[in-house]
Every structure is written in structure tokens, then in C-alpha cells.
Image (cartoon, rainbow, N blue to C red; front, top):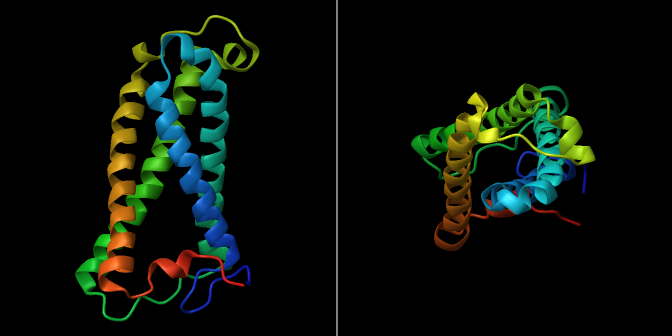
Length: 172
């Protein structure tokens, strides 16, 4: 499978970035919900490291399409409104991811807790920091956008049966 996309299928690079990011975001959303009290010190280092990785992957993914690759052509038979809505959801996903990374970095920077996060020690109360509210709110927006994205892909696969979901798969 070529690294770059064709007119009707995403290449290996964007497909790998998509699925790696999707799995990482699933872990981040779950870990963010269960991270409290006694779990905080054990989960937070993985959460922060993975969050930074997702931020880097997202920036690389954007750069990949700006510099090296093009998206496949739109699927025939999909209305202009559906294309517009899909574009809005994709841009929203990218924006939400980048805001999550920025607000997470803001909490670490404002708290000065990088040493405690990765080296052990008492952690500050992150809920008192201004980026915490943004981080929590945008995590909910990210979840809604991701569920909408997944729902649309499944609708195309099982109801419309237009092969849309297969465009992001790996082909031999």
C-alpha cells in the first residue's frame, strides 16, 4: 500500500495516523474520566505523555496533507450538505485535539508540576487552574464529535453501503 493517498483511498501514512490517533484519544478520554484521587499519580504521567504524542501526531497529520498528500476525491452520491458537515466535524476534531493539548500543557506549565508528574511527589489541585475548565469542556466536545464521526462512518458502511469506511483501511 503506498504511503500517499490515491483519488479513491487514503494511503498508509494517513490511515496509520488516523487509527493511532483514534486509539490514543480513546485511551485519553477514558483515562481523563477515571483520573482522580489515588489514581491521579499513576495515570497522569501516561495521560500527559500520550496527550503530547497525540498533539504531535495531529500537527504531523495536518502538515502531511498540506505539504505531501491530498485527500481522496469526495464519494459520489454524497450531498453537498453532507460534505460540508463532514468537513465541519473533521476541522472540529482537529481543533478540539489541539485545544486539549494546549490546555493540558497550560495546566502543567501554570502548576509547575512537570517534575512531580514524571518524577513523583505531591501533585497540585489542577481543578483550580483556569485551563482545567476548558480542558473538561473541550473533552466533552471531542467525545461528541468523535461519536458523530464514528456514527456517520457506520451509517455509510451499514446503511448506505457506499464503501466510504474502507477508504481509511489498509489494503494489501
